[in-house]
Length: 387
Ligand code: GLV
Image (cartoon, rainbow, N blue to C red):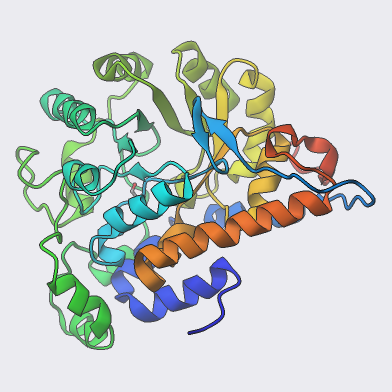
């Protein structure tokens, strides 16, 4: 058993164990992947202030996200096809999150259905929806989420059309994988993944197949997106969807202060500063760079969360010290899942928690709820002076 000390260790194991098509799906950004890369490299630009001789006992990472208690403010982000990284992946990830005391967000594009995840977990999870044209389907998704006891809905606002990820096209991404010479050659080397996958009935998009009308090819995410997603989306429609659900709402995909103001006006419980992990608009700012302007605009009106680029507890600490009240990990937990199933997600959370806690102590702080910019060394031009 290798000694796992970082998310990068889990990522290497994930790559070895999981078919290339699915590993690449997680590990891609759109087009040139500039935003995907900058999401992480911009975190590296921020340095930390080392403080000494400060009592570091009685530390706590416990906090709240949208009023719900969390053992650390790090939720699991909605990630499509999670159940293809590892058999029953969404159930395993949800169980690991539940045991760790952090929120799990189920993607609409999951393999395990809402009902399946609810039946195999004990605590409420969050459910992510896209903005779809079909009102009946949207209403049914909300009803199903309500019946499953979901405690919040995350509405993704930055994916009415899909950013192109070259690798997905080249790999012929589909769930379950279609058998081509290349995919069979790859699968032959991923036998432990295949054995587990043969042992589960969950190999299709569980929330869509059998629920959405007129989906010509339910195995292809790209074709479903092209058919079902609402390109007429505007803020009135967002308000309509929030009303349809009628419970706590988190609006995801906000990267601009003007959009943040709109989201706050609608009464969202939180917004997520996000560029979809660099998978949508390539060339957009990294989330951590976009965060300060959004906090200035709405930080006192709505809870501000951040995703995209978090691979360590240091990254979490930087986002929180900058002013975010919560963060999300996507690839970091998927790496754990692809490496070792539920145990791998647990390990990913432990790695991040330990990094967060130790870094906080070495910065002379004891409570994640009281972090502030005073512990950060932010380069002068970090936000950039754009014309
Ligand atoms: C779906 O939201 C994706 O980014 O693939």
